[in-house]
Length: 152
Image (tube, rainbow, N blue to C red):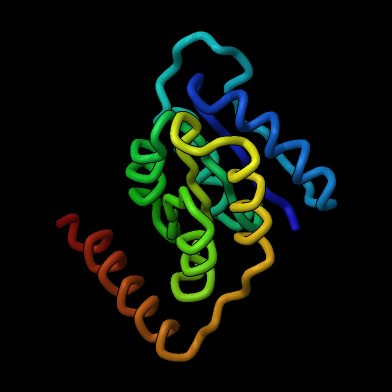
């Protein structure tokens, strides 16, 4: 599995922790920045990671900003993205089980490093359930396609 990861300045420390964990889990990572605690604009990094996932260059993505809200908004603007803000274990599990989330978003100022690592473990170990949930994802895909086609 190949994963793209990115953060803004508020998520850089947590990103380092998660990168170490992913290495331990034998998951290949592409780090799209930032690499500095200097203030940056989260949309720049959210777009880079989302594009990699959307085009299939990587299997999944992880985004981290202060609350996770901004990165979630950015990621979900990109076609084929199902980004889920997960600040606890239950939402991490359900985002994969029912929503087949392909980008995990974490609030770096909200979630401590130990909990964040557990969220990542749960998120990567949970498989999509399919069934009635696949039907719902198909409806979401149709909505996305209509907006792209008609520019609404």
